Image 1 (cartoon, rainbow, N blue to C red):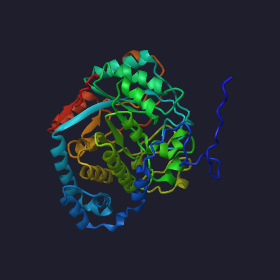
Image 2: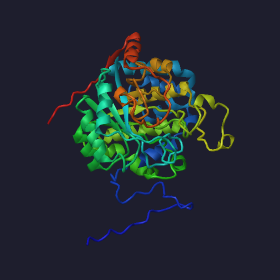
Image 3: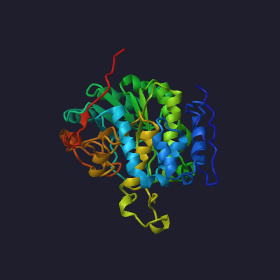
Length: 420
């Protein structure tokens, strides 16, 4: 009889919950200094120390420092937003021309083992849960491919039981027969599992830290593997070690101090780019959206400042409005000019149109955040509830028309996979 491995108890806090900075024995560790450097830099940033002269000095430089990044994210930069946006647009045109990449996310499973107090898929939410089997996945892929898109992002809830690496690799293998570019936004995985999914046909990984404020992260993630802050932080490095072409970064703006989270995400991306010079770097800039059983929209919550005013709901910061969101996107563009920036359907159509070509280089279209809603042939099958409400419901043709109306060019893919 094989010997049963000894179970090593994880460190726990005074409430008996797993230490947010602990690691499970099964987790790969990169032994990377990046997390320590990013958290230290974010903690040291003082956004009140900058004035208009610092912002204009940052705009005047061709290569910007972390001090410039902090100035561009500071309150002092907000009254200068037109100047900042003009400089960001020049960088965007120099690096990307008029091209706007299009893609759509495909949710194939909404089972999740994590408890996240801001997410519609949280394990404790009583929603309709569905996992697509191969026939359903194929139907969804055919329906999306028929719209003309050539890039797709495969999404799941974070559940090793219902959407583990083997299932994700099989979905990616199917997707690669319909699409030239396949990305994934799934649970963080070990290097060997990332390699399996990459070899199945995926070449881009999106993982969002949600917040780089460890105390806030601990508060919003009371249970589940996602509670382990460090394992999530190193996901991009593990994916690049598994030979993925590119990785994306971002924080869910509104969970904590948005300036510090945006700063940390940018420094995190810069550190990874330095360590992996071949990597293609991208940003996404999600803000909190309404969810089933969750929080109200940010725009409807002005004036609310404490959880006590709305018990049981996540209370996001009330200072991340569209001007601040644009400020963050401009700061990313000026700090890391070659990074792709995605604008999601979390934002309203007018805002999305305004940032296309200004700072954003990629947009989603024809989006559903539910499971099994693209293919007409699945209309009679059970569907999985959505992760969050979207604000822009335009389909692919409507997005292409909107892009062309701004003198820009919709691009279905800019990557050609070379078979070994």
